[in-house]
View 1 (spheres, rainbow, N blue to C red):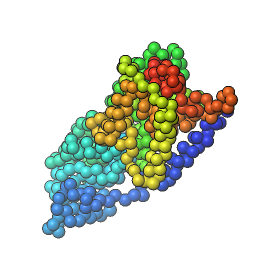
View 2 (cartoon, rainbow, N blue to C red):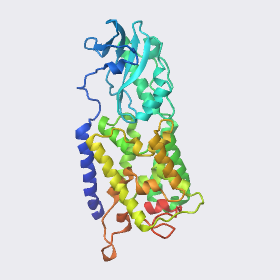
View 3 (cartoon, helix red, strand yellow):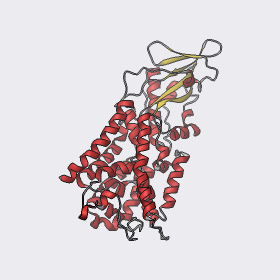
Length: 413
């Protein structure tokens, strides 16, 4: 009980920081007081020589004027509703352009907090042109496939295209909303349960650890995209938590509550796909490095410093997309940005020689979770225990946790 009480201040500080960000920028769900609007730049993809755009009455249908001074096209852009699924970063508002004959000129993302690289990938792949040239009715009922690596984003766009066209035509789509592939969701939950048992019964599940690591990389990383990250939390603060994110919300709850009540490093040591990938790479039999204690201490100090800098940028509103500062979106590598791929690549390569370098020295999400778990207990002669200092002794014997043994997860647990 004393340890739980000792963790409360850290939890309060984290809560206050995110509350401050929410008060400054966020809202839960859809802001129903916000009016639909479009600018000239929003509709330029539909009519290059647009001169002005005006709302057609009280609806979210807009007239687009060309150089002739006459209406040459129309656009529809309603606000996302509660029934519209969100992307990874929240709801996506789009505009659908129509010519005067009612054929689709294209689809354009107007307002979103999605990772920019995901939207760029969809643009480059021509996804927003999937409905071009079709009549409004045919476009409404066209079965458009989701894009691998941006499944949530494409589902959100497809849903909004249907909603806009239904608002324009007054018809209902004959297609059903596509949901996440069942076996992926089942796999994610299975890995979550597996990880919980491994966390609480490490000795019994030690021989299955490599299997757990592989499953975490596959289902939490490449297939499910369920990594916890500042980019994810920032999206929630700005846009609320959509129903599509309930799996990630459950994982977040477990990641915070298990260390708070039981003092176990659950998520980072058993479930995080980037941590799992680094540990698997570290098992490759090459000579490992033991960093000098001074160098290791300096690097350990970078982890909270990196978190504070990013939180400061979040509070100032200087940065909206945090994915370039973390490696997690690299699992959806088709949509990952250059900075993300570089961070991920360097982290994975360095893990050949140093155990989990990203997790140990840089990960801001891990620092948030560890700050809840960390307790300033006193050992003999008043020294802080190893958990408090964030230093865990590994099989290399130098205290840098660089031996990359199979007991890595047990120590962290």
